[in-house]
Amino acid sequence: MISTITLNPSIDKTIYVNKLACNDTNRITKVEIDAGGKGINCSRMLAELGAETKALAFLGGTTGSYIRFVLEKAGVPLEYVETEKQTRVNICIEDTSGAPPTTLNDRGGPFAARAMVELFEKAKDLARGSSYVVLGGSVPLGVNPDVHKVLVQIASAGGAKVVLDADGEALVEGLQSKPFMVKPNRDEAERLLGKTFESKTDVARGALEISKRGIELVVISLGKQGAIACYDGAIYDATAPRCEPKSTIGSGDSLIAGLLHGLEKGLSMEESLALGCAAGAATACSDGTDIGKKADVDRLLKDAKVSKITVTNE
Image (cartoon, rainbow, N blue to C red; front, side, top):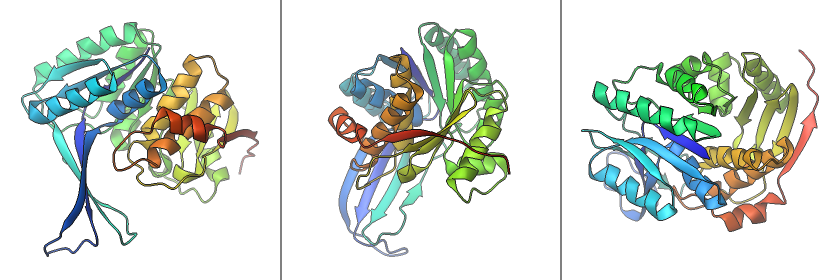
């Protein structure tokens, strides 16, 4: 089983307008609402692919109830810790001008100390029955930034291989506990290493540098360019299938889902990365915050190419 833990889930509300005009009235053309959060998205794609999964999250109020409804509909078993604070709502404004979307993300939290203790206990039980545990996303207000470090330790002690998908201080702290895998995107990897990647070769060197911190598998996602992975000293260049992207929300989470599903089934690293790229592309080509469908993953898989590459030291 591949389980996920989401400390800061959300309802993702995407609002479409013809052209966003600040400080003026805007007419909405379409609204899409869905459950969000890295672990939530990952579990939904795992269920879509037919993998056994379970999600653990903080949930509160009517917004938390909506997320429970979405996961139930998607066939994702859920363990949750109820919080007094409502689950947050993130807003994304998309217009037809071609400009990047405007996002308004709530911080989430704060949560009572007893809620954190309860989540740690549930995480222990979850890890014992899981081959992989995926940790990801932002840290709610009032929760110590080292929480991912602690969760990596808890899940690893339970016998699971841990996957960390975080940014900033949460990523730095989590790396100290040496998870099995990390999946930063290009910007997150650059911030972690304090470098700018000018080419895929630079990305590959960055993945190798992160792996030297004791991380067995490093995957740096590159959006429509695919991903670079470092595993067991080898570097892999994964090319994403071509499709018309509509939204990148959840595509990195879907990449993790496809990759882990492949590894759990015993596929090679190349085959697993290809499945991950196909799953990520299927979600990127879906509307708004929706998760890609298995039929689209299967269709795109044949165009996902993975090859080993050689990278020399600078």
